[in-house]
Image (spheres, helix red, strand yellow):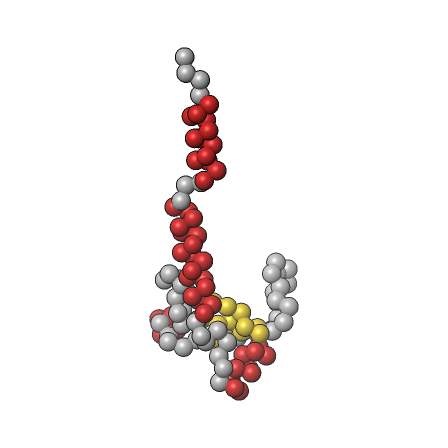
Length: 107
């Protein structure tokens, strides 16, 4: 992908046509365009499917789908929560180990 698209300050849209590939495991129900959002979620590019009707309406009205950046902010928050959860020890395992040490018989 060209750097100009990746570093764009505005959404970049891609239209790959309306048809699904034969035997596509994830068929698309209605025509969409793909949108590369300008903001990054923890350094990760975000691409979303946008219904073509919504895209056309946005072009006519000037209201860009996902233009407020809230979606990327929500994804960033989800990534941060997941990273914190991955660092935190399992609470159930900790309580199991505490019970186990209390129940150990000492001779």
